[in-house]
Image 1: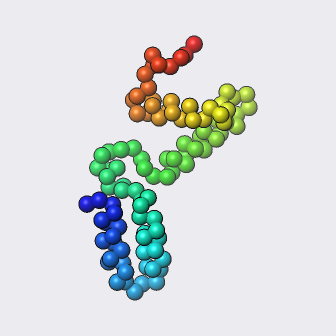
Image 2: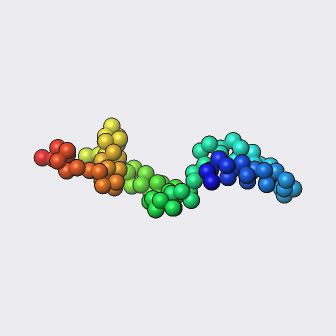
Image 3: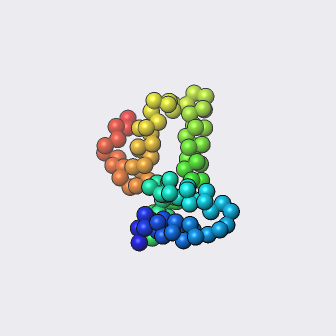
Length: 101
């Protein structure tokens, strides 16, 4: 069952409810259903953490490294550093392609 179908099914059930706040929640689902993450899919595929905590932690770590006095990290190079980090974590970093001297 895909995410769009589940969202639509939830909306049909919730619209019958008389509880306070349900209207706000159904409006939220209706407005944002195109970007809701299918966590069950990620869990079934055993993909890494999809929680925002891991992402926020990584962002804070990058930010701290950018603020180290004398560090070689510069804002202009963040995309390249993040690309390398992603390649490393995904097992796609080929050492022979790195121009290390």
